[in-house]
Amino acid sequence: MTVPEHERAWWKEAVVYQIYPRSFNDTDGDGVGDIPGIVEKVEYLDDLGIDVVWLCPVYESPNVDNGYDVADYRAILDTFGSMADWETLVEELHARGIRLVMDLVVNHTSDAHEWFVKSRAGDPAFEDFYFWREGEAVSEAEYEAGLYDPADYGLPRDARERPPNDWESFFGGPAWTYDDDRGEWYLHIFDERQPDLDWDSPAVREEIFELMEWWFEKGIDGFRMDVVNLISKPEGLPDGADDDAIVRGADQFVNGPRVHEYVREMHDRAVPDDAMTVGEMVELSVDEATEFLGPDGDGMSMAFNFDHMRLDFGPEGGRWSRGDWSVRELKATISRWQTRLDGEGWNSLYLNNHDEPRLVSRFGDDGEYRRESATALATVLYTLQGTPYLYQGEELGMTNYPFDSIDEVRDVDTLHNVAELEREGRFASDDDVLELVRYRSRDNARTPMQWDSTENAGFTDGEPWLPVNPNHDEINVEAERSDRESVWHYYRDLIDLRGREDVLVYGSYDLLLADHERLWVFTRTLTHDAGETAERTLTVVNVASEETTFEPPAAVAGAADELLVSNYDVDSTVVERETLRPWEARVYRLA
Image (cartoon, rainbow, N blue to C red):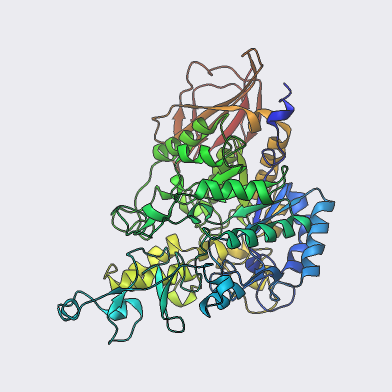
């Protein structure tokens, strides 16, 4: 069957490879990855078969949040190389038919950005670029009663004021910092050195649209938009009203009152029709997603949601606690997005990225069944409807890092939140701290790419900015590529399969055995205009480190035309009752 041209889009058919440049490949021996290092590995990316590179920030930055604090949107940080190096990268990628998507970080800037420096100084042209407010006065009686401690806000003991509202930062603590030079407080939903831009200012929006157009003119193919649904704040900046919000105040600044107006204006003004945009969306429901996506929404190609990434949050501390999750819950959560967006939007498919732990350590079995669980989870992702995102090292089955000390951590988010939890007395011992850090820290994804078994995994000749995982002697590109049964080769086979089969891109999704606690079973179906089935596949995955009996539903039992891919050797192509091995995955073409 031929999918109608008006339904096709290059980004729907693509596989996106995310590069975290600091940790990818270092060519100058300073221990930090760089753009020439990516150029050096372009052939590797081409061999893997990916279609798009999403490049995490390489802009001029003080690197408080590893580049997500931008000081100059039109300059390359010299640690990563030069603009000429970046231009070479675009040229080498495009020569191989690989597109480039850049990170767009415009909810906030660095406090080193010229806009903030001038705004802090009271320059009238930049006065309203950020949120400057006077604090709330605190009475002496409140202070004497111990209801107020200026140290909580980084203020001297004689201070008698608190922030303008009760909003909290995602990185821990208040979302406001007092500025001595200005004599006022400024808003930062993230680190105090990442002040939020005020999108209500037409001048702010104009500056942002101009810099977006500038990058498109330089040849990029799209943007990944960082926390884009936080860009609208309500008038008056009221206190948070939801005690269960992910952080205090999130009910006010997530999907704010003018967010759709701003995202629509961004696409109308600054995004070419054939470009790809993917929005990172905090606290986004599937119904809200439809309002952002496609020509009937705000124009965005797709969105990252976090529903499935919150299943292992604990009840007492959200992200910075740990709870149990089940295969049944994971299936239900992803299936809800698959079904709701079919025909109304487009899914982004991921289980890890630079902000999340390694998928095989979080959702799989990174011990005895590392290869099997890595390939099983990949089978699920690459046979769902949507665009798969492959984070560097995922194709190797890279695992979380075994932190021995908090001193090994570089991530500002981890350090801030751990410090906050320690102040609250959450941890009984240092071991409790490390156990949570090993499981949750973003640095798990940021350890250097493991190219070979030599010292520092072939990432650098110098001292790496973040420790290299000690298991690099067995988990590395060189070893994986030399083994035809490896995770790497399985990913390449899946990417190739998805590129050949329209049904795996455009087919509708139907979940089978929804209540099964181990098996993830679903079909993908393409139909003729008359409603007749044209193509159909069946995915069967045992999401467990134990054998599991598969009893196929009557609708698919016995109906198989071909086994398209599997991560174990399989003798039969018939869909029948079988005992599936730990983390066994199969994809059938149904007759």
